[in-house]
Length: 330
Length: 273
Image (cartoon, rainbow over all chains, first blue to last red; front, side, top):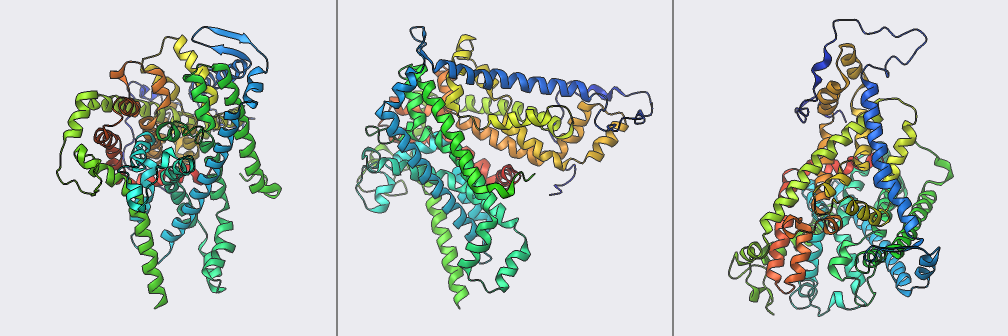
């Protein structure tokens, strides 16, 4: 990397924090005390700073993450409604109700379909376009890269509204473009795919950037070797490049699993879960139960199921991809 | 020649896909300058027949979009500054100090990035409401002040800060804070700008938390304002085009200027992951 050493002055140190070096009277630094090899890390002033930082991080994790998780777990075992101050132990009743709720199952299926479709779209488009941009036949690489990544940097809520207008059956650009007359968001056959298309459009650019970075990091001799072997373009891609980009794919898929299982804003803006439950996702169900019906206990139970589902899926995918051979590569 | 044809197809194909990618933005921007009857017309044209600023005037009158924009900007700047600073500090401590429990604590920090928001949202909501923080910006800033992702990213970037320089400074008697501000920070500019971009965009598009926390309409952020607007004036499409333009176009402009940094940041976030 070797990013320009000490080029532009970074953020001018915070006010008052400069402590003027406590300029020690020119005493030679303590010559590494005998028997202690760690002269480097026990520098003066390290301890207080480390204590402050580590303590702050621990306190933040305890109050903003650990405690909320415990509270949500406890809450999921209670009939919990903040509006009428209910907080009554009900054991596993919320979970039983959840698993008996057809909306929960519809939402689960929707979530898995949405996640799978969006991941496939993101990986395929991301890989294909990155490879196309990477090709030495392509001019203006920077331009394409910049344009593909554009949707990713724009704010999701606003972008979802733009797509709601795009899908408008009266004047939306999607219908004008395709010469169709479809009410995308109000037709239960098309609503979920429509949400998926918007999501893929929003996110594929990130995959393009990652795959491009992966491609540029490939050792040149491998590619040349494949060229010399006379491997056809497709064979070269299948047998050399795709396997070598496995870490990138792993990263894209894992972050997508985590992200898409909790997708919410798209559905909130585009369809509100409708028509019927056609586009209800788990996170949307949780939101509705929590902040429309104030069933905090029930929503917490659903959130925990989502939590466990995310953890299991991520682990499974990670296991399947890294396999036992690679172990810890660090 | 075959290669030539392949090259043309490739470039044209990419161009078409790029055009489709940015089309929604172009359409939004142009539509925001159209009169209502032209937006809803059966006969659609990309360019407005009559250019008008009526939509912008109307959203400003009905819901003070400038104010909401300012709120979002203020929060995004403040949170980004705080979170980048704390992340760099955390990254420095995790990356350059050796202490017991370092590996464990860092794994815990990393693990928190995988927890769905839905799990912690409800308890956080009751916690902040009980603490009387609802409707204050403190409720937005506090949970964002320390970022696990930021600490992770900055820790990774510490490899670019050579230990020898830190050692030399220590031998010269520099305090740790001096080293952090004057040596570590300047050497981490690339990582800082990458994280700052991510952080800013996250605050800019954050929806649910401000929606739950901020109750006074004039204190609300732009993202939430959009949904309020759409709820109240569901058929004012022109207004919606204008409001989404206000939310999106500034980001696009900043992105186009700094696109290199945006892209480098995205790639660096993943490379060593």
